[in-house]
Image (cartoon, rainbow, N blue to C red; front, side, top):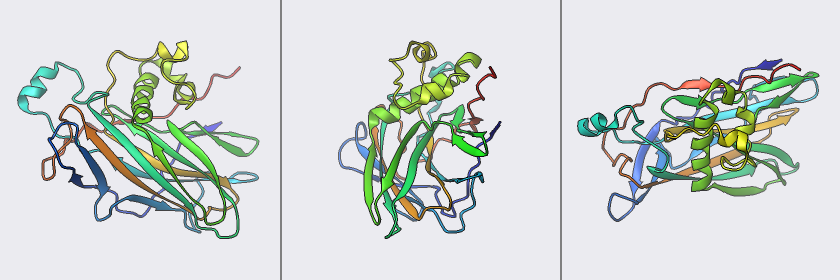
Length: 267
């Protein structure tokens, strides 16, 4: 049996805010994406954070916050020239995300996962979890790392441009056909790059829509919510003039359809 994923309210204002433009020309310049009223995206497990699933031995806890990428709208001429193609495609801009995850517990080691799931103009990747013998096992996130943090330890990790690009490929691949939907957990597994496994490669569509946002998450299987915090900064590199300039209107894509990997067929 498998229950759907649930987004836990974070209590933080995370609407897309202003951009800080670097010097130089518009193309290939780097800009930071920030939440309104803050310089970084941030979340912390509070002592009263409700579990996503209450297990027989341990609970599954999860926090998520959205990150919206500021894409400029197409001009009338650009929209006419699309001829059904997506306005944003992989390679139009590059994104890098740097996380700092901190164990606020000064006495105990805490184990926590950092997750990142992509959103394109059609789909949002929403991992679920399966339940076996009273305990929950999460589906793979599109990007995830698990850390055992020593008391008071902070660790900084970067989701590199090529790793974020792989999220775009995996999301397009997992949603390309009903047959590929069944392979979603395999496709997004971090050790399985899109050009390695022939089953995954067969699912890669000819056109890869660009990502318009992410869900940044903290995840832990424990008896209680771990006192762990995360801060994330987002940097974009404009390759093909798709990023909105400060003060410019931001493109509003259609509402994406949540995609949760279907359960494996019963043997």
